[in-house]
Amino acid sequence: MDTPETVASQSGDNHFEVIIVGAGISGIGSAYHLQKNCADKRFAILEMKDTFGGTWETHKYPGVRSDSDLYTFGYEFKPWVGHPIAAGEEILKYMGEVIEENDLARHIRYGHRITACRWSSAENLWHLDVTRLTDGEQLQFTCGFLWMCQGYYDHENPYLPDWPGMDQYQGQLVHAQQWDPGTDYAGKRVLVIGSGATAATVIPEFAKTAKHVTMLQRSPTYFYCDENRNELADRLRLIGIDEATVHRVVRADIIYKQFETTHLSESDPEAMIEMLRDQVRSYVGDDFEFEPHFVPRYRPWQQRLAFCPQADIFKAAVDGKLTVVTDTLETFTEKGVRTSSGEEIEADIIVAATGFNLLVMGGIPFEIDGEPVNWHDTVNYRGMMFTGVPNMVWVFGYFRASWTLRVDMLGELVCRLLKNMDERGAKRVEVSLRDEDRDMEILPWISEDEFNPNYLMRDLDQLPSRGSKPEWRHNQDYWVERNQIPATDLNAAEFVYDGQRGAGGRSNSG
Ligand SMILES: Cc1cc2nc3c(=O)[nH]c(=O)nc-3n(C[C@H](O)[C@H](O)[C@H](O)COP(=O)(O)OP(=O)(O)OC[C@H]3O[C@@H](n4cnc5c(N)ncnc54)[C@H](O)[C@@H]3O)c2cc1C
Image 1 (tube, rainbow, N blue to C red):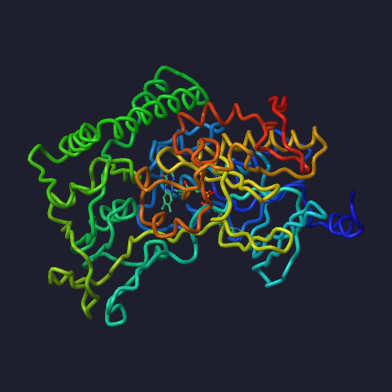
Image 2: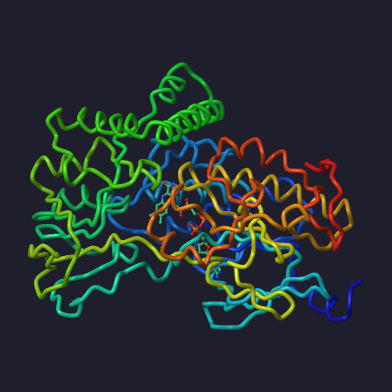
């Protein structure tokens, strides 16, 4: 029953049935599904930046682009009509069109930073502390359901190791995440520290006008080299197929190919490595020497493959515009850096392509009835709900497949969950371990053997835990989830509505 306090807090402008946190590709996609499936729900998207885009708004380094093709990184519901790999600007334009075509702008409150989320069981409400960044005003929002789309890393503080001697360096040191597009690197010596997707993107761009580029890597990365075009899409367009069909068919084809390469990586990593090398050779010749700078220590797919259009990074190396050094950085010097083996690398600009800092739930402190939530103490249900945390979902995408595939899939599931609550007249839903789960082994979020980029390994203990049963983990295999997630029985025993465990029987909603 509503208390006078509840009624008061619900009557204000800042009460919503659903609040979506973040206007990145997850938040905008989730809002689309919510509006389509639950048209009667009053909702808002709170975004701390002054515009939409998230990742694609934060990163402004030269050549910033997706690694994934946009047929799968784009939404299921909006055809992608450009080249498969898209520039950051193109992704922003696409998202802008989604907002406009679906009249979503009226729901977004920009410049609203959430600083705390507190659940009250007495009211069945989330209370959000929010700072309005334009004037510093402290606002209170309430909602019945929280849809967390805040991403997984710190947009404001990138990962910059504390290297010795950094203060001695007289040149310009910048982290790629904080790159100022006005920076002039023409004719300069540029050192890029790192070897992942960001390094692979910026290096060919720098190589066009810089005096010389050096890449200092601790260890090599796998690169996937190809043309930035999709033959099937080109063919379908040529024969007059409409864009909606092109999107659907090409998306299915790419997903299938990704399935094949993912499983080849696991079942026969050597064959996968040879295939990746053959792609490189097709651009830079059969005598290209992979040892030692292009031979990673891990198996392909234990980390995301970095895309290289037309093997551009390899071409820069072959043309002498890029020098690769595989070594550890011992210290910064006045003029550059010195490596552990004593090599001095001089540079006018040093770009740290060292990745990001993981940030669980945007670093927002959460409380349940006055008790702080320690995410590591919770067990995740399919990477989207967490034991002990009611009326909340987190949209966490795929690492190996396109993130957005999961945004669309969870969008539909969350709407089904909201409708199921309404049908049951429930004000609260949470997941809870069943009796048969009590002895289940509780493990870290992901196994190191499965996927092990540094940002995850550094902060694994910040993430929620997983159980040894399939439903109590975030399965990174889209091909398994695309059957399992739509088939989720929302009345199964792991779902608890208003304190009552589901008793089985698939909900009819949706
Ligand atoms: C450079 C780069 C390239 C990538 N390329 C790919 C790719 O090709 N394919 C792929 O699948 N994945 C890629 N990823 C992973 C990528 O981050 C995701 O695919 C996707 O963009 C994440 O979208 P998101 O909306 O979930 O989160 P984000 O893009 O991180 O957006 C989250 C939003 O939430 C807002 N927010 C956070 N905290 C708060 C708060 N407290 N209050 C209010 N608002 C808040 C942020 O300001 C931001 O706008 C890439 C990541 C990076 C860094």
